[in-house]
Image (cartoon, rainbow, N blue to C red):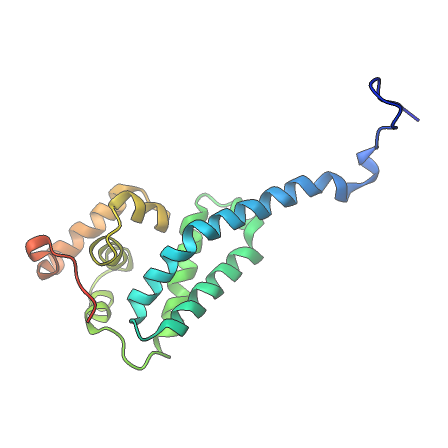
Length: 173
């Protein structure tokens, strides 16, 4: 049995123990997921509440839980994708849209925003104009480059100029 030159403790042959060898990678992936969740869950919750309305706290929370559950189940796959944030954002959009039917009274301004604009433009307006995120933070959250968010805001400004009159943030009803 081989011995370490610094002690009389025999070295462990990790090739016999694949779980021991894989454990650091599993721990690192779990820490990465926890950090991702801690960073994004509050912003996801704000987005879901803004989309569904203030009175829809339970459906908004359900959408965020379902999104993070999806991310946890598929974390290793997501890590191999070109943009993890974009894939999770798409799932959040999907989960929020599933909850819209359960909300008795959605904010009509927000509903109109999503009815009349592409999703990226509507999300850009909601995140930047209503929730007060800067373009860089909104882009990071959606898994886009800042110019894509700026383009979304520009398209919204052309299609719905009243949203930008006086550059005042939209408010909740």
